[in-house]
Image (cartoon, rainbow, N blue to C red; front, side):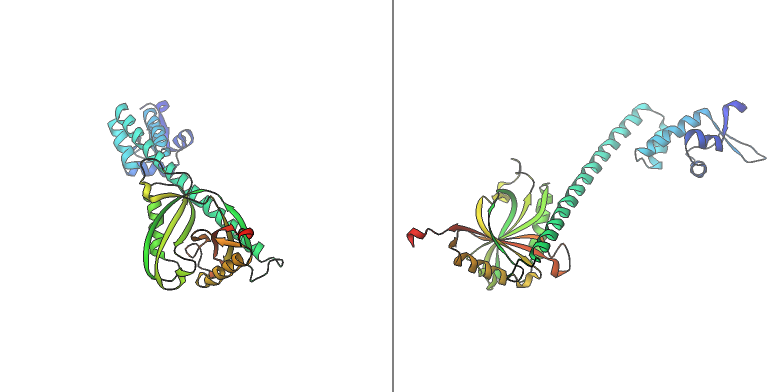
Length: 297
């Protein structure tokens, strides 16, 4: 090989932007073996064709190919083989992008809940809010999309969150490939407060989703939530004593000329499955109401 047609390892490093350490490793695994090695100095020298090969390898590495697969492609030296492998790799990259987008969306919705929880904690800690840091609001609950499961739970008392039901609804959402908002809403299909009395209770666990389900999704797993007026309050702290918040909210409803017009729900803003610190758990209690007609009383 003429001197002008061979390149030292240092020249290859500079021209191809491949570190010497990497070039030596490629030599060891027989991926790119220098065409000439000086017997006296043991210096490695590469041909111009090998420089081209190293540029191809560098490109394939940027696409995420493993060295074993790159060696197969290089050894085959076929445009058709290269095309098929690039097509397959692009499908892999597309799936990774989709996974990352879903992870970003989940993380973003979780951060949104954490910020909402921080704002609520700050508001409820304000000295203007009395009654054990609780305040009641009458608000319009917007119509939202919900994927749910509904089952009768024997001798139920909601002193603690049902992890089994919680995981079940999360898994259902994942199975249906739906974008969840991270908010779980538990609705009690019973008379108010019966969920605390160790009675058989029909309980719905629902996950708010970003958009309605398509026609291919089982309709019995989907419904709309909201679209009604409700009295709401926020329970901050240990979920085990949330019964006190329910009682105070019902008392407020009766005292202020409203009547309950639907099933009671709980919206978990910061849940026991989000953080371990019970003092930072935040649950919104939602009770549909209508204003009493005083003329009929």
